[in-house]
Image 1 (cartoon, one colour):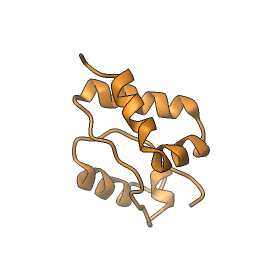
Image 2 (cartoon, helix red, strand yellow; image 1 turned 90 degrees about the vertical axis):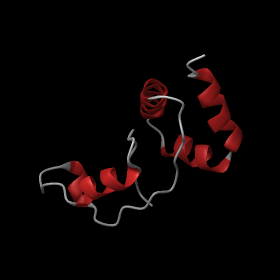
Image 3 (tube, helix red, strand yellow; image 1 turned 45 degrees about the vertical axis):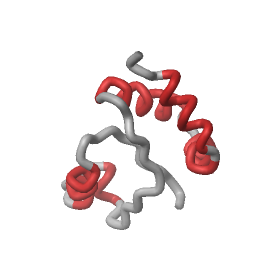
Length: 84
């Protein structure tokens, strides 16, 4: 896989359908073979958006690969951006 899309949603299937049917001038319309490789369940929308922002700021495919490879990284993110 050459690139990853990072985003927040409360309905993954709806979001995938949106990207599959995006207009041709949208970035996500360039690929029709979307494959979900990593998800996280968050406590709230706020937590999900903070984690999304953190991942995007890392701007690294290696970072996302490591999130998939090392579950403890997910736990640390969830704790770091916990609503508690």
